[in-house]
Image (cartoon, rainbow, N blue to C red; front, side, top):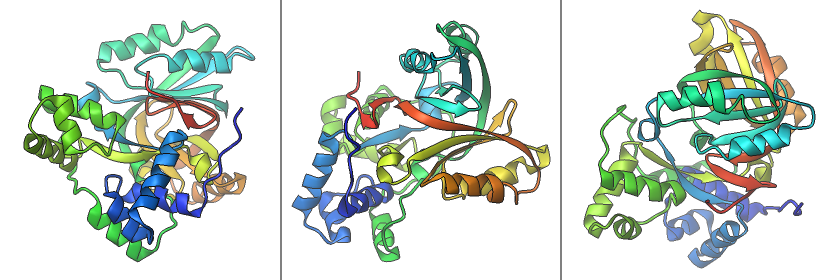
Length: 332
């Protein structure tokens, strides 16, 4: 196992800046951070070369699939959790896989291109993985907050305001739509490189640079692709990660989801159909932070009847990117 890398203050400030404005030019990032563009460029290149950080494009659901994702909790035979997780991580429809303790031995998400494929995964593929004893799932109905909304709070208000001016303007996605072949090819590039330029899009898609620029701006403004920083939260000082499945009275579900989406730990909060009502995927600096969520914050929300916690032990795949000891592995 490699030694856990340590990010210094300047590294963390750069990550925080990229979280606000993932596609900002190096010169603009440098001005906000009070450094030279060459220094910022070298620092970003080092983080990428060491496989600690990548700016990717988070794609809106209608561009990926007919339906919404599913949360899946898997119980395994004793001692086989890691093996099962590795098998699940090989499925192309599984964007997230982790070994866990608590509610389940393995937690994963499924996002299949077709509804019939999702049914096949739930009824056949996942249960037939060697070592799986049982699995249950919750269907995501609506995301209250997504991973690109979580922030590392290090910068001053003036710095954040300046970075927001640099961020790409974005409307809320209008819903399902027909996408052109050029759009889909551009999206595939942006999924792997959220900072790709119009020139790079033009070369990848085979169109002129002005056309690529308009296509790129359209995808970003419509929120179909949302650039974001991909880095393990443990490298940022948040080594404890947990998935909290909350049960709530029907009339309280939306209030609970809204409140949890505003919680500082929230990376991904969704309203679901299944044994739970709301799933809160959060990151914490330590056990006291998780205890505060469970014993204070949740306790003060009316309508909650129960909750179950899965503490993440090891993430094998996050947003379709495989990782080892937190480091991002090359695609494919």
